[in-house]
Image (cartoon, rainbow, N blue to C red):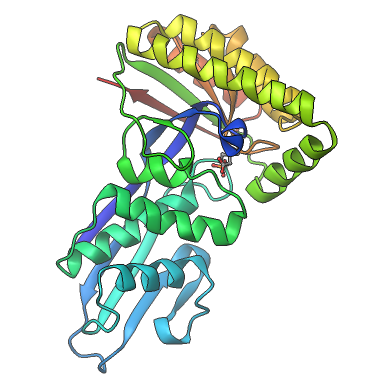
Length: 312
Ligand code: PMV
């Protein structure tokens, strides 16, 4: 039996602009995870591959499932990548504690956990770059024009400075970052949010490119502040990033009120995280305020909060 897991993710700085070639910084959130379990199934007929994901009521033999669905797709692509299209009978079960459609990267995490567990079980473990590439191919089917940041941070499982079409750059976290995530409970459609930005950029290219440049500059500054161990300054950059995300039309009243509640409770900064229009926001907390900020988010309407720490 082989078990593998993959974390959720949050974007500290740079979402949306990252689709247009600017950098972004994302971190894994290990408090939630997807898990895949692969078992040999010696009693099953040759060629059978049972795939199960109870949370989305998917269960069946691989050959009978829609190959365009993300789960069969990542299984087929992984088997192809390791050159074992017809393995001995197997059972694969995937579970996840990452809320779906909340901007926490659940789709990427499920793909990464499956590719990792399956390749390990079959004795051809893939490295993070290969797993990330497989998960990216699945994201492309379902999200149209993803930048690749979700699959990258989830496959590497560490903070990444990311530019599309480039390998992620590792960086030092100079002082631990205490984050509090608040889920609005409003489902996000990444393709709707990204499509809306694409349409507005088509209508106002100069304004939108300037906003993307401004976000990219915040990311560069943010990386320096993270490496230098200056979280209060990073928080300020995150709040400025949120203002730019409001300007490009991807915030919402629910996200704004959670951001406001975090700032009023002493957060160093706060912003939406991910595609926006719903989903999750993220606050950078002084360690002694982390608990109070979580409580304030719940009072302001968050349906779930998560606290995580980046760096030791
Ligand atoms: O799908 P989400 O909510 O994790 O958002 C991903 C980040 C975006 O920049 C909005 C899209 C992308 O592909 O980078």
